[in-house]
Image (cartoon, rainbow, N blue to C red; front, side, top):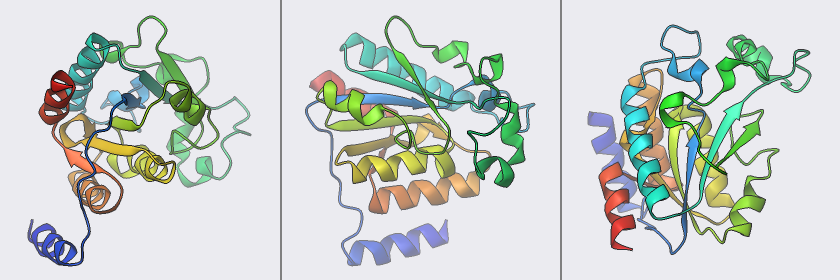
Length: 210
């Protein structure tokens, strides 16, 4: 895309987008790969087969190396009293009822053993959750993000991850969105300001070398 090339050149001249790299103790966060988001027939869903494939590869390697893994879901009470103005802005979120199949992690990347599913109410996996406590407890210094959507929950989590002091890694082929424009624009912006946008193969190679 012309705008990416032009803006990328301008940002590079002004010292944006330096690579921070992986630290000593990475963790994987699989964001919102729940049935409501992975079913392309639903109002909240889209075709994320490639994202599921990328997340599965990451999970396999993080499990192999016994590195921390976490999942998130979004779910609301019947009253929607816990949804605030979010439900007004995006009425489609009414599909996300606590305790229903819609908010369960897709079987293709389902958690195993003691892997936790963190319940959130808003975009960032940090907002109103105990994720930061989990990461501190396990000595994590790097957060690898996979899942959906690039322009929503992935981006919000990447911003907060930086603000909490983590090296933030986003494999471009393991995150996705409902449309290509928001996906590409937000990957560009994350890479410029908040984390390293790489490919899944690069993350896997780094883990295997470490």
